[in-house]
Each structure stands twice: as structure tokens, then as C-alpha cells.
Length: 139
Image (cartoon, rainbow, N blue to C red; front, side, top):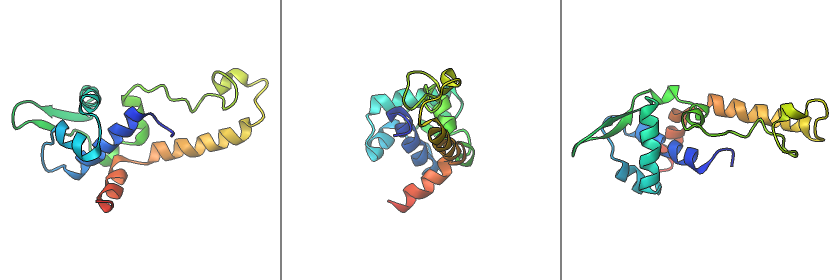
């Protein structure tokens, strides 16, 4: 996995919101539809609302909606919003970050650097809108 369970749940939930942009959606609905623990999703959504990715409306008719178009939210954005300690800049074989080993890189440093660049390209160019399009085809 290239990101945490927290990020995975956030991406599933954001894709669900992108598919339901015409209405407010309750956490319970998303948790059930995407098989995400409700308390965990609530915590994620409150953090995303503080980051102004989501709008939150209270009350019996309240719920959540996207505050940002899904085309403008990348996977890397979600990782950043959730303050994940993303490990792609860590050495694949040694403890610590690759930059700590610049004078004597590990034996797979060159190949890992190439792979890391491909993964970063994927994370910075893939959007929630694209995830929602895939999700809609699997329904």
C-alpha cells in the first residue's frame, strides 16, 4: 500500500461525495456504503472540514459536501491534509531518509528513486474526480 488506511478511507469517502455533489451526505451513509468505521470517518471528515476541503452543515438535514471541486483535489493533497508522515523519501533498505545516505547510497537507491518518482507522479496527478469516475463504473 502506498498510503495509510486513513488516506484510503478519506479517498473512498471523497469519491462518494464527488458522486453525490447535488446533496448533503451524512457520515453514516458513507460509512455504510464504503464499509468504513463511522467513528474513524467522522474524525477524518472533521479534519478535512478544518482544512476547508469539506463543508459541514449541522442539524437533522445536515451533512457534508465538497468545498473544493473534486478535479482540484489530488491524492497527494489528501495525504497532506491528513498530516500523514509520508515515507516515500525514506531509504528502501536503511533507516531514515535517502538524503541521509547521499554519500553512500544503498544498493537499490537508483531503482528506488525512479520508482518513487513514478509514484509521486501518480499521487500528484490523480484526482478525486478520477477516483469517482472509476467508482461510478463499479457500482
